[in-house]
Length: 341
Image 1 (cartoon, rainbow, N blue to C red):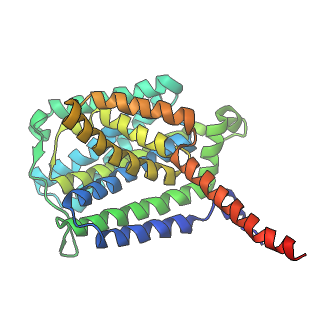
Image 2 (image 1 turned 180 degrees about the vertical axis):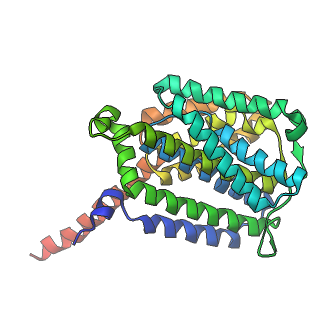
Image 3 (image 1 turned 90 degrees about the vertical axis):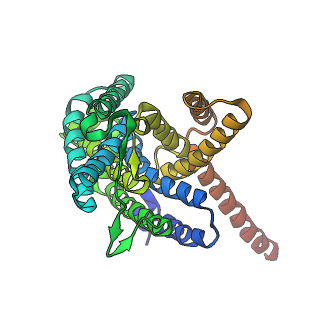
């Protein structure tokens, strides 16, 4: 019998188990601290882009301000642990609760907006939060940043060790993936797809689409907050420029390049852009003496190219290749049988 759930959404376990296998095997081949740091940051950013995929790809709502929620999580954890000696785990939980409340309250008015107006509204949110990070210098450290954020420890294990933190971050990513896949396959996920396809049509069925839009917006913000807390406790230092609009744009590029309609695509896009980002910085600084804001131009060009030649993102290209390989194998299996007959 055909499993309808797998037919509609594909198997959740093949991709998940494949990813976990790669995560477990990579440390056997990687010795560079630089590469480990890059892989840890990819894991942290994947948590955010998975949330953005749920928001943009499934609910059809744009956000160019998720760096704000990333920053709220980072600063909540950082301030509570560095200045008030609160437990890091409690601080992370408080950060996620605060972010959920803020995002939910913000989402009620701004998610009534559509298209580019909604995008501008989320940018405005990012600017407001960034300004507060600079202005509340008594707590945030202002432009100089916040120092002294402690490492995490779990069951007596110091996660300041890079290898331990690597496994911990990707374990968190695994939990976020499973949670997100369950949302996608649930009634809520089907409602989000319906809202994405036709919000008016969904509302004619008596469904309050605004409630679900605000809810998924708040959930994606909580993902960003969690990632921000992990980032703060890994780097042990945070400063406002990390959470500026440029990072929100970078997150959007990651999701668009990977494939906005798939959380696997969002993760592939995150990894691809992170490695490309390092290449751009190396080439720009080494050969052209450029960087900073100029990098945004490159990201813009990438989005244009992807939208023209790969509208479904890298995940769409990989899916097409998979189908081609499957068809070719099917033909190879059929031809000998015809020859025998």
